[in-house]
Image (cartoon, rainbow, N blue to C red; front, side, top):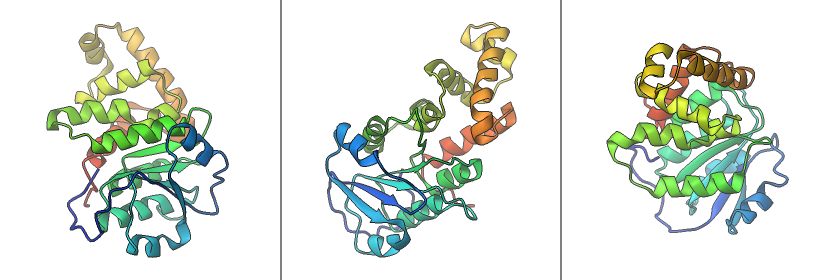
Length: 232
């Protein structure tokens, strides 16, 4: 989502999807999957020269930053922040085969709309179309929280089920204890406990999320980052 930076990029309406990719990411199949998803106008950009590309003006409805480089804070968040600081306010997502919780924090703080894990659960055509639609939609302030958590491809591509994502949505509202959450959702404590256990079983190996404090931290930065780059 757009930040509060001054616009320096020309406003050029475009239906183009830009894949900003470096040598660490194998993009085979990505372009084909996007085309199958209905996104035909695709441009490839070398991430090593993205500053020159941005200076020439970014005309696109979506930028996918594809990189597995996690040196320092990761190349993806750096490119995203550069785009936002230049005034680019369309959809941005990072796509990586090597997810990192540190990079996820950096990505959402930089103002990305999503962070997608490139694996068996990634339907890039569907996620890309959803990103474009979400970036164009103007949400009411009170709707942000529920929409961000339920629509993030991050959790779908991490393998969470619709029921588990529903639990995250409920948890993100007030970060309740499981007993209180069970009452609010009309479930038993055992049902809630089992759902959280399954969530940790999936997010633990991928991102190191193993308890409610870590999960609350992740959800908080995702929600805050969706409103624009976070200034420390």
